[in-house]
Image (cartoon, rainbow, N blue to C red; front, side):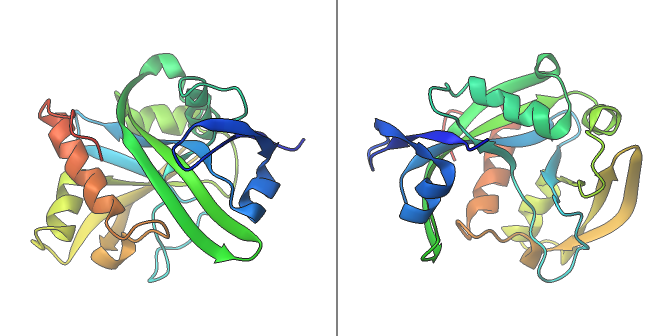
Length: 211
C-alpha cells in the first residue's frame, strides 16, 4: 500500500498530506525519525548495511529509521526501530538528540526535503539482542563499532583505521576494519562527526546540546 506522509512547510508546520513517492518527486518537506542504536555501557553503535554490501571505498554506514506516516507522533515512529531490528521497544531507552533539516536534490525524480529527527536508542547487551531478534532477511546486516574510537579517528586523526564487526542473523563477523573515508553521507559530510561527538557527551551526562 502507498505510504501517506504529513507534508510540512519550511518551518516544519504540517500543511497537508501526500503520497511518499509524490513527496519525493516534488520535493515536499516531511518528517523522518532516525535512531543512533547504541550500547552505552560498551561505547558501541550499530549502523545498517541494508544490502549487506562488502566494505569498500564506496561503502558508507546507514542510519536506522524511516518516515513518519500521516498523523503519527514522533513516539509512534519508534516502531521503525523494532521493525528493522526486532528488538522490543521495552528493552530500549530513547533520548532525543535533535532535528536536522536536510535538503538534497538527487535529480528531477527524487528530491529530498526532510526534517530528520534523531534519537539515541540505548539497548543493554545490544549485540546479543540484535542477533537473537533480527528479522530473517538475507540482505540485512549491521555494522558495529566503538564510537569513541571513530571520533578519535575522524576528528583527532589518532588512527588510520578502527576495528569493526558485522552482525547478520545468528552470526557476528569480527575481523573488519573501517577508515575515515567510510564515514560519509549523502546529506551532510559532518553528520558522523556530530553523531559521535553527541554520543560522547551523552555518555558524560551532557546531551542537552543537540546534534
